[in-house]
Image (cartoon, rainbow, N blue to C red):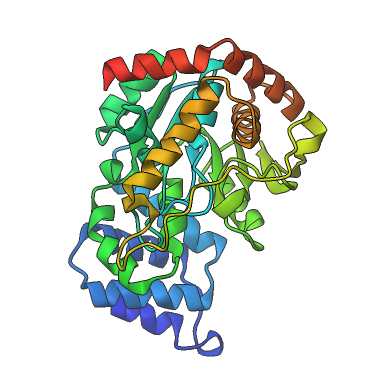
Length: 354
């Protein structure tokens, strides 16, 4: 069976098609990642899925197909939280998952941050952009990522390094121009035993995201709707999420004012005009510098919205990994680790390794 046959099953409209079975969905993404399908077929298939809407069973099978072909580090590592923000990044707020991840690592958990650089359709700023400015490379080598986590409790690994066929799909994704199920699948290329903190876009997707993570066998996970789908919460308003705790799903609400971390404004980026055609904010060296400088300022102790957001993000990582029982405990531990300079110390150890 090839993608053309599967597209006939999906149909041209909701009323004349059907959802894919687990086996069909697994086979579809197995073919996409293995090569041999034309860009036109892949683009048409991903677009058809977007029109139809994707089920939990389909997303689970897609993620399993991706994991089957990927080289994933830290598979059996205990006390690990895998952090997965949207791979196409942000263009309105600086990505603070690096800052939050370093603080969480300083507070005692192991953090594997999965990222990439200039991914379509947005081609925004990501953790990779921030690390570049900080003088620490995101690693493309899964074994190196595992070594860094073991030695420093933190690493940022390229999703494309774990699954190289993702690079070959960038042109297709750029041409489609909108998010497809591929954007969800790449956030689920994660160690099977890890706790997962996943950023979700706005809308009624949280329940689906958590059900998929549960179906993949994860015992603890949080899906959170931060700015532009980030894992770091808002500081101007509350952030919605859902937590998976063993067999239970529990609503999560992050209200910054409850922790003394509210702000009248979000961390922001300077404006340098609209991106050039075919490029995004991740291609802009001025914005890369600005995003890195925001993280450096937080780690140096500067107060403000970026610090507040970082502490909330770190608290979520600590809670996801079950290092703490409540977000309030997480904020307290994150604050102590940041103020003691331990996050900056981890960054220095990473610079020596990379």
